[in-house]
Length: 424
Image 1 (cartoon, rainbow, N blue to C red):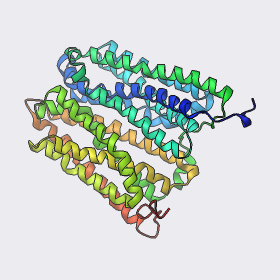
Image 2 (image 1 turned 30 degrees about the horizontal axis):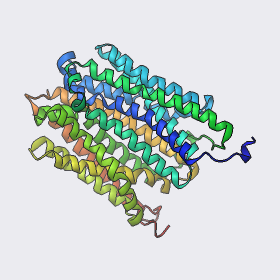
Image 3 (image 1 turned 45 degrees about the vertical axis):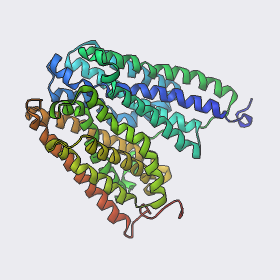
Image 4 (image 1 turned 90 degrees about the vertical axis):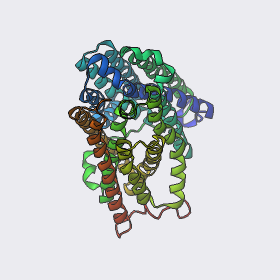
């Protein structure tokens, strides 16, 4: 049947595609976050320092600095299905190498290979969803996909509770992560079969990816660069903290590993529930730069409260959870108000690239500060320098959001503070 007269895929078929693609992403999210609850076990059983642990997390981000260029080009060159399969296999090979040996450089090699696959898989899944969902359904599809992905994070951070016995040995939780990561291949294989069938009977959209076009980099306005600066400071204050969060809660606040993992996973719970609600709120009231300023402001006291007081840990984690829900809900869509539609792929790709430079650097930096401070249960004060760094990042986030607000309320504004669903 000619493609011009083929019907669109049915709703059920499309939502089944979403489920299996999200299943693949669930596996990669779980494998990424499996490291955090293991930090103290790696320290005790393998003699790893916090710098070593920060390195294992940082090395994941290193290839992602280039992913937005290479991943998109590969999808264009060999096609979406083959790219998904390559990335899915890398997401299994990496965790397998990490679990195979207790030697730091071999484990880091596994994390590096996993990083090459996981973020590229994210790019490819985004491209696949854009092919299957259009218009208003696309936002909901992306939101549901992200929710399922974050369930992988929630499961990994709470694995000390449901897989408590596995933490008797450093390798067993990594083996569990390896098992879960096979979902990356299983989900892709099922998607492959479904897409091959769909191409024979349905009309599908074209494949597009977020790639960096370097000629466009000089065409972005000042407001865009303020958002990029906020992006790197915000995520560098959140994810490197999560790298050491469980270990910090255990050693500085004497929690169990189970409760420490649960506290860290609260960020994921807040994000799953509150992010779409904040998105709706901002669409109604505008004031996007002010909202990002408020979210960054919440981060400044959070780390110092945990470092210097014995406040109930639910309080700072709830404040961080609000920030982790609010800022991404406002920040990523704001780019679309500032950058031309034809350059959005480059704009988002560049943001992702710079974000990963920050994650790479700050995972190493916080690991190093914990090491030189001799952070441990016997010396919880060794964590203080790292917590000050996180607080300073929160302050810088407020600063960049303030500059964005000033820019957007002046003659060069793009409507970030004024455009609402009523005015659009």
